[in-house]
Length: 189
Image 1: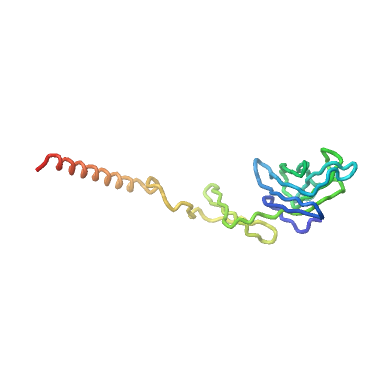
Image 2 (image 1 turned 60 degrees about the horizontal axis):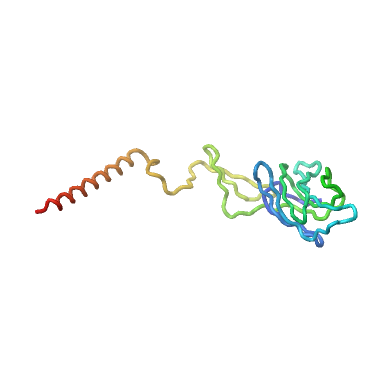
């Protein structure tokens, strides 16, 4: 039905069939996948009793499709907290359908975002670097030891108390040197 899909849910989609084209994105936000997009070529009403459209996703665990949102004048935006492998748009007779109708308008998959640089996330004492290196159809996170440094410039206070004391001593000597120079100039020969 959907071909071989990817079970990651942050990416973009461009699904089209005949004269209908739906494009958008899916990103993780506020505890759910937010799917937002636009469809062009939808005809209102689709049929005498089919007056609206709905976006559905197929859960990656199988089971019944989950309705994400109704499509209002080509605009779609809604959350889904289920990981999914495919998506499709149906023509519907009800405003709040519990299951998809048999009138599938477009069907397709999500394409993963392909960022050139790794995403870095500090987790406890381990730095996790997630790359979108794909192995088959999965996204593989990799981790590196905590010795990876994201800062090349460090604060002097992080380098130790001896460095701070040496810097303070240099500043004090410089101040006394300037005061001695100013006094000797003002007292004259």
